Image 1 (cartoon, rainbow, N blue to C red):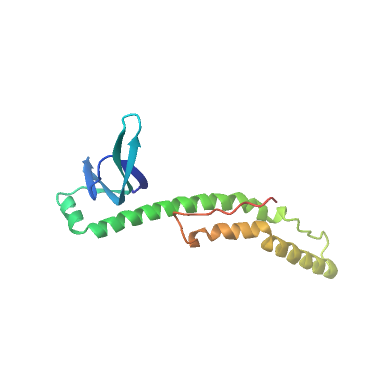
Image 2: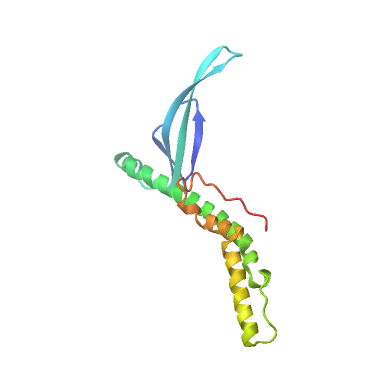
Length: 172
């Protein structure tokens, strides 16, 4: 499990820290640390606040874990970032899938006004085929179809999964 969030503290965070509980180690990485001076007008004082991105991951603890992280810091940090990215991507895809499922009903054959002839003759069959293609063409190129395609394209957005722009659902 991992988590990235903008964090603030009054003390400079270490590059990483490890907290152990019940043979499980939670590793936290502080990245992109910046200093910000804030003024307390009541006390007429300034204080330094540190802002940073926090990545965390949970692993099984072992005796040489901290040494291994120190010796392979970049690899561990990349793993924490990848875990976070994968988790966030899964959350975005789950939301996208729910939005797609919400529109499935709009594409059910009994909802798209197909005219099926009661008697099958050559002329009714020809008219039915024409009607089917007209309705399917309209459904497949309509606003709802474009919306559904935009939902399916979310993972290809440039900022995915951190900066996702969900399409607006059209009125029916």
